Image: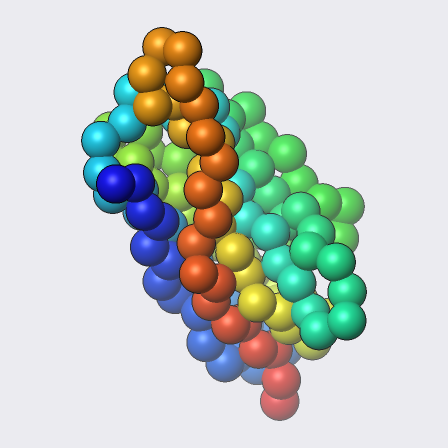
Length: 120
């Protein structure tokens, strides 16, 4: 059974840094892409950053230059380094993985979410 486990959320002051990590457990054939999304109450979940299995990255405009996503395919993990955090980055952050379970089967998985709070 494939599951995602997230870690690294917490409380940080404006201008500070946090690193989120997400690990895939269970047997998979390959990784299409993994990424991070975030959601605040009353708003839709939004993309923060994604990275393909080949290392191609994509970022929301609001985090470009401040966040960096990286993938370690052998370890089946994705990290999100968040620097110069702002109060508007406060949200629940969710890991998403688009995985190949076999040559012919793919599926999406979501983590349980981790709270990031940026406040003085």
